Amino acid sequence: MAVWKPEGWTSHDVVAKVRRILKMKRIGHAGTLDPMVTGVLPLCLGRATRVVEYVQERPKAYEAVLKLGVATDTEDMTGQVIERLDSVRVTEADVEAALARFTGTIEQVPPMYSAVKVDGKRLYELARDGKTVERKARKVTIHRIGLRELKLDLEQPEITFEVECSKGTYIRTLCVDIGRMLGVPATMAKLTRTMSGGITGESCLSLEDIERLQQAGQLEPRLIPADQAILHLPQAAVSEKSAKLALQGQKLALQQASLDAATYEHGQLVRLYEEGSSFLGIFQIDTEAALLKPVKVFSAVTD
Image (cartoon, rainbow, N blue to C red):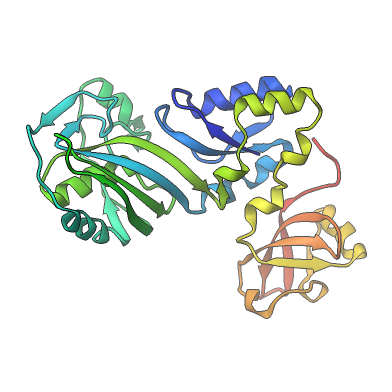
């Protein structure tokens, strides 16, 4: 299931609400969103929680609004203003050039208001105590970044851009760094997650939709099958006889599976299916032992 997270809600708030609606305890979300952020929040229900870690690892896409001429301690508009300019002058060419500098692998220093741990404490806990500590830069990947809209006639110009990036990318920090590239303070004014793990807004339901569909008994057709959330993994199939062994968590001979030769890489994860039938789980290729080893098995029993 994918929820369109409303502004002002934490990811935990959304999970708690859906738990109450569905009367289901086993629900997990794939990728935390700050309260001010809206957009795609994948939820894994029941046994589908087994694929959370694989969904989280996939790229995410955002639409962000960056405000020039103001800086805050949180790197977004929820924080205290620590710097402000009376006027800012940049051109569209300046902005385009700055954005282009952030394509590929870049380094980011995690913001103080983040969940990163230093010496066992969350950075945001230290920040709330008025402390600032040294943070190590982390490498992240910006797969794509592009300008959507410019409002240069404002006292504090706004840049709307879209970005597709790897897990662990701080868009707040990206906004600050883009401002630094332009030579002015900057902060994130608005953020919407438009895609997470291949799931887009078109697949999302609002909390109101979920409640209405559940009451009408029409929610199940709107759920995303667990295997559809991990389509980035290669697919393999086995016979009905081998499928029964797979569901028991047994290793299978590699030759029992129909596999694209391109996926024959030691340690590669694959989605395993019974031929022409159901999803069996995630298995790992062991080329040395010529085996398919079970990693996450999806039995026919529902939770």
